[in-house]
Amino acid sequence: MKKLILPLAFLLLYLSGLSLWAEDYKAAYERRDYKTVYALAKPLAEKGDSEAQYRLSYMYAYGKGVSKDYQQAKEWMIKAAINGHKLAQSDLGWWYCNGFIVEKNKKEAVKWFTAAAKQGQISAQYFLGEMYYTGDGIAHNITDAAIWFTKAAEQGHLNAQWVLGVMYKDGIGVHQDSPEAFKWLSESAAQGNSWAQRDLALMYRDGTGIPRDLVKSYMWFAIVASNAKYNGDIASAQDRDEIAKTMTSAQIAEAQRLSAEFTPKDSRK
Image (cartoon, rainbow, N blue to C red):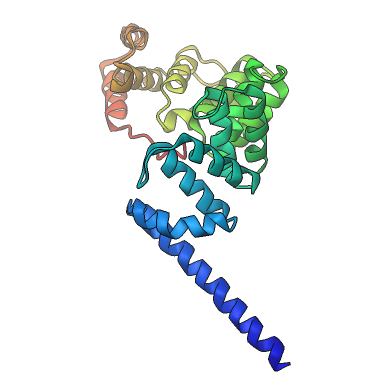
């Protein structure tokens, strides 16, 4: 019995040490001490630790703490993906989709996006939905696109929420459903998606599936029109000014207050 206890104790101590080692390199990664990350993560990666493999790939891809080396980046990313690391699978899908580091291959992109999406990786779910929607690298399938957009939207992906809102608004791949459209467009708009904000403004202006509300319509048009990221939106500015002609001064003041106070919610993507 004593012969069994002693090796078991050493095994537990060894595993404990590996865990602390992993935490040390992750802490170093957070403070961007990449040389320390490399020294600590490399032995773990060689032992098959998928997280360490993923970190090494990133470092080689962008020259963080090591000389940029795309071949090493590719090899470690593939190893991490094969070992089931969902972020590695998603990133590898993006690499194949865009021809970054690896040769562009849409079928490989679909393969890795699917693997990551099935593990709940939010970006992979969105990109997979996009590929089904456009038929890029995979057979065009709007129903499957809606399924993956929904999964990403439920996790807070603002672009997936916008696309899903449009699909429900126009009955694309799903039953036309104005309340669902309003729900997803509102979620996306609240996170700062300008396309969703404009669609929401139009729904409020026209009373499409929701009560007509010029104050909220003006508010969303104004927000899109003043979005510096898009250098403003001329059409939204014109729409804002047009509906202002039918509003009272009090309504305009309220709409301007709401637009000025708007702050996007933190986005998960």
